[in-house]
Image: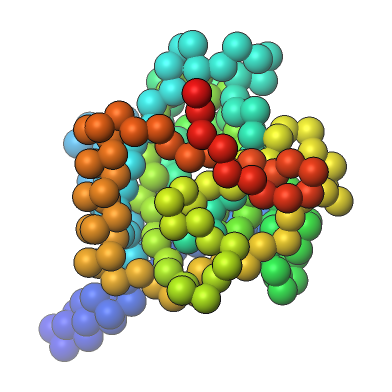
Length: 223
C-alpha cells in the first residue's frame, strides 16, 4: 500500500512532457498526449503540461492552390512554443520543414525535415525561434496548445504580432538570427492577450504581417 502511495505521489510531482521522438534541431521533438479512449479510434485529449492557451486551426480544401498544399511562408514565433497535434481524416503524409533561427543555439541555422501521419496521440513541440512550414495540410485540423513567454528586453519581439514570416525557398544563409523571449508568461498576461485578440476579432481588425525582406524584418498590413 505504501509503495502505491509513493508511486502515485511521484507521478503527481512529475507531470512533465514525455518525449517520444527527437530531431536534429535542439528542442524540436514529439511528446505523448494525455488522452482517454472513448472508442478504439477516438480520443478525449487532456491539456498538456504547461499549457497556457490553445487554438484550433482548420485548413479548408481551398487552403492552398499550390502543389505542396501548404504555406508559402515559414513562420517564426519569439514569444511562444507551438505544441501541435495534427488531426486528419485520412492516411496522408504531412511534411514539416524547420530551420533553427535562435541566437546562441547550438543548432543555429541547422535545418530538418519531418514526414508523418496525423495522430491525436502525440504533439510536435516547436520551440520559439525555430522557423517552420508545412505541406499537405488541406482539409485537416490542428490543435495548438501553445506555451507563452515574455521578455521586456527583447527588441526582436513584436508584441502586436508574434509571427515573423520568411518566404518559402529562402536560402538557409539568409534566414535571420533572432533572440527569443526568456521568461514564462504568467497566466494573467496570457488571459489579457487572449482578451485583446477576441476584441480585435470582433472588430475584424487587420492583422499585422511581419516579413523578411532584403535581410530586414518589416511590418506590413494586408489591404
